[in-house]
Length: 347
Image (cartoon, rainbow, N blue to C red; front, side, top):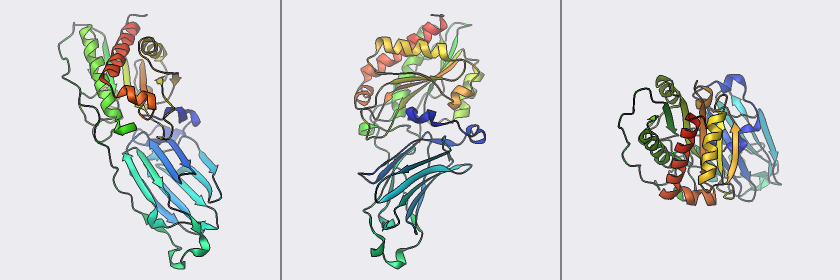
């Protein structure tokens, strides 16, 4: 999951963009009617939060996280003066919710909760006039942040992986199921987990390619966590002819209307992206959000043509219902495999 419709906000500062370990804040939104802020990053984090007085500010620090826009600022309502998001330090993104000077809140009633290691929300309590606050409460108070509560899996693990050898000199394609292990990726409607969707689809793509004489290799074949550099290293070590990373997208749970397929490339992967994207569009019922260029780590650091496919939105009403079904995931796998074959055959 990359919440990718917000990715082109701005170019990263060079020092931050080249950090392989730092994640990115890919989506944030403050909902004034619910007094709630949603935060999505592309890697697991553990936020830190505190309430600072005079004026009342909720400060949320996202460690080991960068923000692609230099600074964002939004005016909100009569209670909330503004919400600011900026890079606080080289490795920390800071979100500040500042109340209007005449209002405050109870720090003990602020809730910071995670529904996945990379998806958090902050629920603010009811605001009240500052004049009604006790003087003893006008100080900085840390907010407790419990570990994320991850919903139970909704998709079973894939079947056995085909491992029969292919002929000598066969083309090599690395299939990269995103996330895994303690990192579920995006978590959507009904607890639908990205890591399980993409492992199932990727395993099927792997098996289909090998049946057609292509030496397909998986960066992970089970529910385990793999960092980004080893995924690239595996592709480079295999001297792959192509690299295909498979993901599922997400946005705020308040936007179930956003659905659709996206395919990304960086430098040399456009023809591969077009072949796979067109194959999916031609045989699977899915909305088309287009082929786009992006600076994802696995696309920038691989030397062979590389793409990242977002199968659909686990937070989308239409996509989530489809991605939950084995039949739809099979159709996606067949279309991706065919697109790869078309690319290798120069079609």
